[in-house]
Length: 114
Image 1 (cartoon, rainbow, N blue to C red):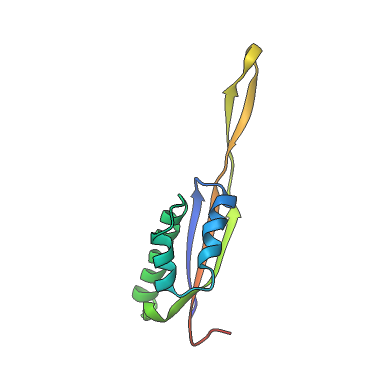
Image 2: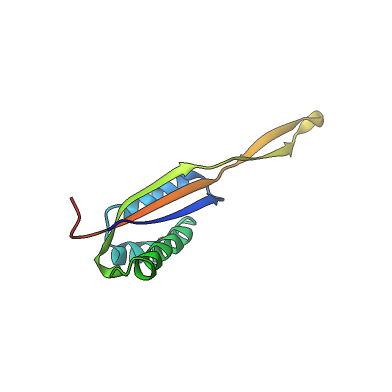
């Protein structure tokens, strides 16, 4: 049974989030939670919250046992960029982009693993 959870507009660049997402792809939920809790990257905390949300969806909505699930897919996409100005010399202003990310996490049963 497939369980999904989404996180939109996370205020960390997608490139930095992908570093953490690659560590837990294909792992069991217990192992993924352990990896995320001991990782010092800034993106590990929101991904851990997303994993817990997906596990809660599996338990409450679909009546699945969370111990039999693994991270089948975790997809990190670019979100919208917030544009800001940085003052420079001679009255100029350079644009800086504050990047965001969208994360899609899919959990699946171990017995349906292909």
